[in-house]
Length: 360
Image 1 (cartoon, rainbow, N blue to C red):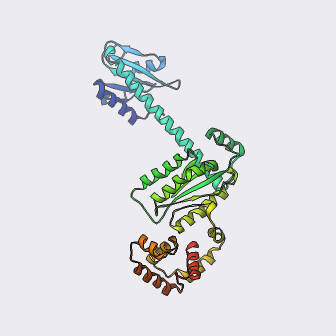
Image 2 (cartoon, one colour):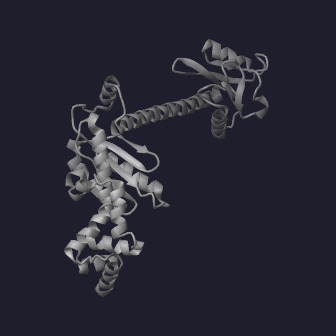
Image 3 (tube, rainbow, N blue to C red):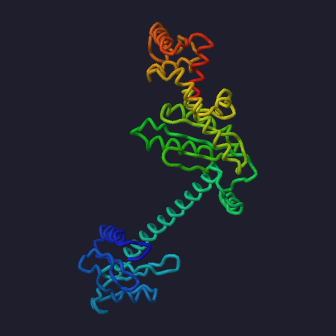
């Protein structure tokens, strides 16, 4: 019927109001064409009084049938939105009886349009946030004037330091409760009091967070990583200026990898040590080192070794975490020794194997 209300929506409106009042209702274009009606025979026909009401902008009431050509007794109420008449709502019946229902239909239509308008604004705002985060974290070009306007609208200080927060879903898992996990991620972002976050297809959630907010927000990120252990990792980048968020984002990536390797699933760049040294190791060297050390281990053996390192190479704590007997753990560590040639219970050999895990 028009660019604001489509026919399907208009039909839903007239049927909903008829359920309340029991009278036939028409949704009429400004040119007089009936686009939706509870009387299907009238859809697509011309409504002379409806067109007149649209042109005049006045409510027109008809006391008797055929007072105007083809018209029926009732009320015809122009619907004006943002200064423009976009429809006329007509209800058949005694004007005194149906008047309130015409205003009800008008109110429902207004609410629908307003909701859609707010939804469009929200989508536009989200698209703008996505664009700015993409540009800043990937080091893409963005004009100073555009960024300044965005920061002013978002009430963010361009002179402050910020951290890139990267939450990554593990691609090896396809959780059935993905929507619930996404809700937890968004809730965690909202707890920081910062709305500068977005989703990056296919599995990354990114927030640019003021460094001053980070200390109070850290527990929430740790809790998220703990509650979704194995399903996601949380990496916190270094504090940088907005224009240097590409560096913070790369450091968040590094922290996220370290978080997964540690099986804690949370890491802040500030706390990294060995990972910083290993970050510059070329891919061919990484591959060669892993082939020489842990490439022959099964997934189960890797899990045992990972748990062993995560619990400080303590047999008792590792066995309890794996729900196995201490002797069983020792047998499995001996098996790893036989396969790799490195004994996890000897310090130097353990360092070699741990480094291989860090390079994965």
